[in-house]
Length: 238
Image (cartoon, rainbow, N blue to C red; front, side, top):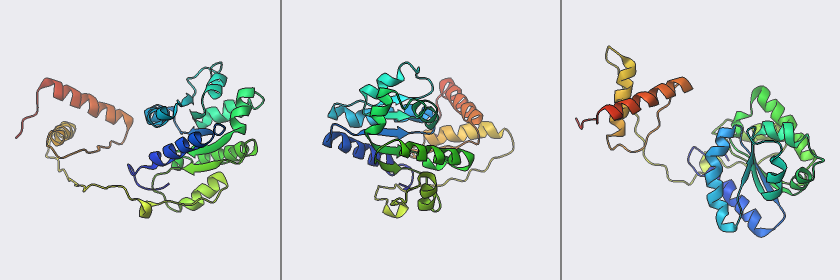
């Protein structure tokens, strides 16, 4: 799935996972996210989708104690994990009954944000995925990526499987009209002008928008400055 942001890629693999659980009491689903923050971000979506079917997703990342992990695999048919934990813990405990049972029943593997698996990280991930396929049954695979060049070749190299690609041409989601604003700073404190601009856009009834910064530190500075500005005084309509 290489359709644009907010086109419904998550809904595709969420609904397929729900259908797998509904059709048979056996198959399990493993969803791999490249960072544990992404797992926490996606958990509510999984819970909302699976709750009507009487299921609840589990998750295992580096913060989950090793003593609790077998129980999570035993209780949940859908488990969200990071590749690091899957490689370092899951693949090192294949003899464990809960691990063996889960992997032997694996019906669907999901690779979300697969474009992250590039360079050295991607090479390690490719080797890991081949090891995983060697110790499991015949599972389906769904990958979700940002828009990238040659997605079929990329996933083929990563997984060893030739995928069917759903690209931007297949995107049927509603795409609202977008406005691009070019802001020119006047001489002075450019950071304060940026904060003032973002606050005025937010209060200008222009709809939702995204603001990007070139580092996490800058994002934190912008957020804290906007919070102080909003707390100090409301923005005028002028």
